[in-house]
Length: 77
Image (cartoon, rainbow, N blue to C red; front, side):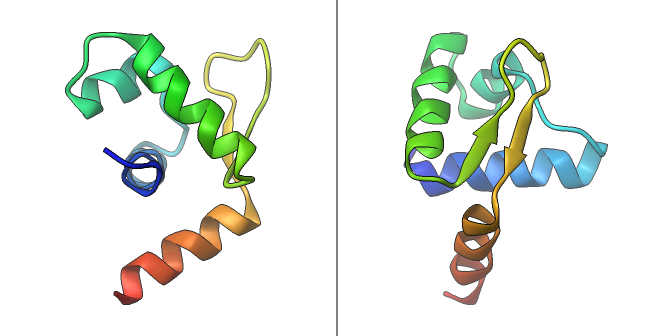
């Protein structure tokens, strides 16, 4: 999975549930049993400015304006 795939998963989860997923839930959606795998992708998304992660909060993932733009562009293709 690439960073955009993870961003789409997070966005879909938020739309379906009204709140962001935990790292464990992301790992499950990715087909991985390890939250470390989701953590790796979340750090990369954060470095690229596509999400903001509030520290010490279980569901602290927020999709940034740049991330929303990337999602919108991906839906056009």
